[in-house]
Amino acid sequence: VCRMNRYGYSALAANRAYVFHHQCALQVSRASLHQAPSEPLLRRYPEYERKTADYKSVDRDPVERFASLYRPHRPRILYDLFHLTAAHTGTSDFGLSLLRELARTIESECDLFVGVDPEQRFFAHELAGYRIYEDRLDSPMIFDLVFKPCQLMFWSEFRRMERLAPRLSYTMLDIIGVRCDYLNSPRRQILLQSAAALCDCVFTISEFSRSDFSVFYRADIPFRVIYPGTNSVSMEGFCAGEYVLVMGNNLAHKGVMEAIQQMNGRWPLVVLGGEKEPVPVNVPWLASGTLSRQHLRELFANARVLVYPSHYEGFGLPVIDALALGKPVVVLDTAINRELASTLDNSNLYRIRSMKDLNSTVAELFDREPARPTVQPRRWREVAEEYAQVFRELLGRDFDVAKMRARRQTLQTVESADGL
Image 1 (tube, rainbow, N blue to C red):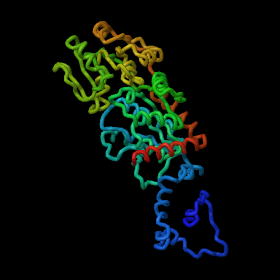
Image 2 (image 1 turned 90 degrees about the vertical axis):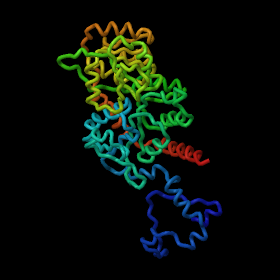
Image 3 (image 1 turned 180 degrees about the vertical axis):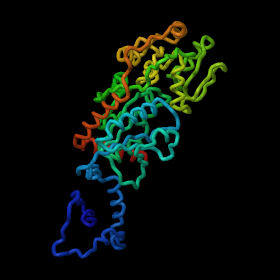
Image 4 (image 1 turned 45 degrees about the horizontal axis):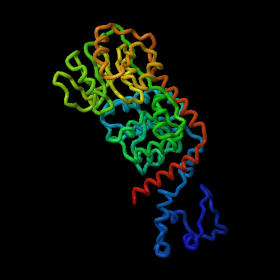
């Protein structure tokens, strides 16, 4: 093969073919076929080792890589949580809440593995009992489907997913990471567009997230909209609460500092967010990433009003959790909050035109008995059922070979550009 290739001819490999040598013309043992190439071969054709290495890492067709999945077997799904950091965030809350119900929903149909960094200890108690997959390049394991419960932020995440399964799926929470220039980069902007076009199924958590992506990229991607849920429920012995709970983080679009400045000194405040900002000394600031889920539930239960002052959200999980507890929630009159109002149909959701209306609205709600919710928001179990149904559809279809090859080509192009 090496000799004829030097004259411009290429050898084509037949996947899983058996070569029979007539009358044992080739006298070699099976063991010798796995030995290192001989010195004369390498002397004559020094490209031999490079070409065999290139085949394994670059040239191997993805159909061949996943050919064993065509055999009858119990499907395997990888739930990709490699992105988890040591902090409670909206992203981690979404991923872990969906995982708990999804695992129960599909456990009788397939094997669910959770992909997580082996150094991840912060959520170890919440991941106890799941099959854990620690990605190693020497691991032979492959999956029928990889699902990531958030958008891809780095090309390495896309590369790992492409390497592990022929079917890829993820949930687009929002595109704030490319909307805001101080968070964006050209590589990330291209990644979000490429991943949406090349994955087999992309979910979003609201019509707003879907349309925002389409407008920003001028692209018509067939997203599947599945609203998040809640496991919070209104309790007996309803607690009216003692303080105004303000939620967000340090990012400008969350509007936390604006809200504090508007309300400072009027009511007892508790701020739940990221790292502490310079705030008035009389305002307790809790770093949400360090708190347990039980502590978070208690903060919600003991609040009288929730203020969620974000200018941009894909959905806003604290809103639905607080409404489920029967708490009044004050939000800005944005596109996503208008969508939530029409979807949730909850009289405890109050939209204000600007931060200037925050004082008067909170004053009215703080002195009023909150309305008891007549309809509970949807539960995470319902959300998991919708995801599971889509996963069944994906697993019931053949591989999309065109997308598999397009993903490989795109990733090879990006990796080649990095080497320039």
